[in-house]
Each structure stands twice: as C-alpha cells, then as structure tokens.
Length: 390
Image 1 (cartoon, helix red, strand yellow):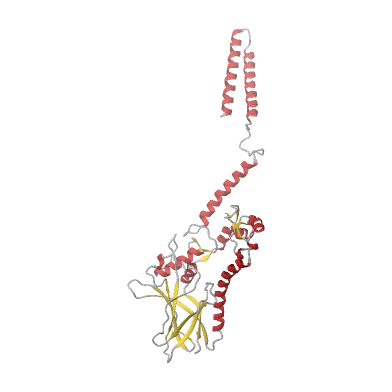
Image 2: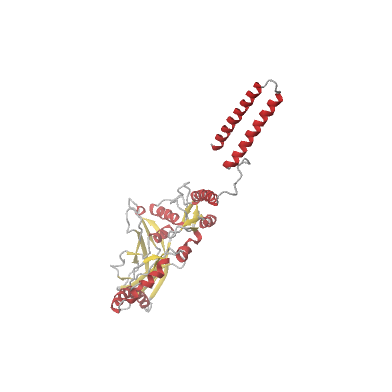
C-alpha cells in the first residue's frame, strides 16, 4: 500500500513536469522536436530515479520472494514451530487408537485391515465380547479381531514413542520414550515428599523446594512420645503382611499338601438371559476329585455395562468322603501368566453335605487385571490345597 502511494505521487509529479515542458515548448515555436524528446526523457529518468530512491527508503526489494537473511530470528523460529505443530497434529490423528482416540501408551495392536488399537482398548473389546457372547470386531471396519488375528505394530509403537508430549509438571516437551524418566528423576517441578514422611511429615511439593523444606522441617525434633504413635500405625500395617506370610509358611509345614495348574474355561448358563461363567475340568489333589467354578460380578445381569469388574470362585469336592475334610486353599497366578494376584487363604470343612464353598473373591488388583483374564481364551491359575491335621 505504501509503495502504491509513492508510485502515484511520482506519476503525478512526472506528468506535471511533462505538462510544464509541453507548455514551454509551445510558447517557443522556434524550438525543435528533439528538445521536446530530451525533456520527456529527462522527466522519465527523474521519475524512475525518484521511485528507486523511495523504494530504498521504505525498504522494498525487487528481487522476488527470497528469504531475508536480516529477518528477526524469532519470526523464523515461529514459522518453523507452526509447521511442525501442524505435522504433529496430523500424526496424532493418524496414529491414535480407533477406540479411545488417544495416542497409545504401550503396545499397539492392529486388525487385518490395519486399524490401530491401544492395548487397553483391545483387551476391553475382547472382554466385552466374551461377556456378551459375541465375536469381537474392529470399531472401524467391523472385521473380526482376536489375539490370533491381530498383531502388534512395532513401527507405530516406535513412532509414537518419538512424538513430543508435555511434562505434567514443568510443561516442557519431551519425546514420549524419555518422558517417564524425566518425570521420575530429572524434572525439577515433579511432586515429591519429605524424607521425614515416615515420622509423620505431610509435606508435598516441587522437587526444587525440597532442600529448603527439609532444612526447616520440624518433624526431626519431635519427642519420643509423638514418634511412638506414628510408629505404632506403621507396625500395624507391617504386622498384617507378616501374619499372611507366617500363615503360608505354617501351611507349608502340613503333612498333606497338594497343588495343580487349573484352567478355567468359559461357558454359558441355560437361562433365558444367558450368563457367562467359568469351570475347570475335574482334577485330582490329595486323592480327591475337585472342580473350580468362577463367575463375573457375582452373576450380575449385564456385567458388560459395568466399569468395575470382579471375579469370584468356589471350590467343589466331587468325591464322597467318610469324614469331614478340613482344608485351607488359595489361588495364585500360573507359571506363564502375568496377572497380579495377592494371595488370600480361605478355609472350609468339606463333607458329603457341604461339598461346596461359598463364592469367594479372586484377589486380583483391579478391573484392568480382570479384563486381561476375560480377554484370554482360558484362565490359567495354580491351586494349592492344604489338609488341616486334626
């Protein structure tokens, strides 16, 4: 706009100069036409020179859209950041999970048509299909999915691990592969606790403020009476864990101990609204025949609509016994499974009239572990039975 105004002004100036020269020539009839040509050329030269001078004044270059080496560095960096940001957004939309629409945090699975699913959503789809007695399908193309049909996509996993993401504490960007180490060990704004937490200090704050707090913390100067109350609470938690392990060690001293690997297989009830349950084939332990049964959410009508999922099981004695058989038993994970089970010891006195235990919780940590078990073709665990000596 500024250049156009300059050109218009110079054009008017040149035209006025030409008009003046034309008037001068007309007033002097003895002058030749060559003088008129020289005057016009001189006016044009003056106009061009004026335009060039004004161009230099306003800093306009006529060489074309070449990058300016004297441009401010911030402007160039900002343009590069904007372009890379657009690329990252496109990669997010391409590499995201088709179920939760978020970037996968661990393993990435793909259907036969290449649609991506994060490990959590993939396991959840398989668990839901097991509960609804349906074939699991891809949310995008509706092709069948299973652990045999789907495979991991290692290229996508590596690509996602290199994408930048924000640290939740300092808000700086890091590759996803190094973010966890940064947040746990390097970030100066990560939330940390006082080293005197074990004696009751409740302080939590950024890591860079920890030395200042610990130098002023009042808990190291507490009296012995105050510390004894805090240590008493810690002892109660430790005592519960010790009691569990002592009970297990005590059971290992029994004369009759048996264990076996059991495989829970999925079945459906014959009710109008079928329900999923699990049952093992018959197995022999301590010269007796047994069966294990399991159910989801205590046979809830629609467990697939619930976010919280649990498994409970019962032990059934199939053999006939002459006298009561008092036993302790517990379930642990199988030798090749990665499910997390906290050991819990259950007791029951078996007889011909009371040959079934009540349904007791399978002590898995959370619903995620339950979904892992439900997504598997079978549930493989290890059962220990201890016959109590009379």
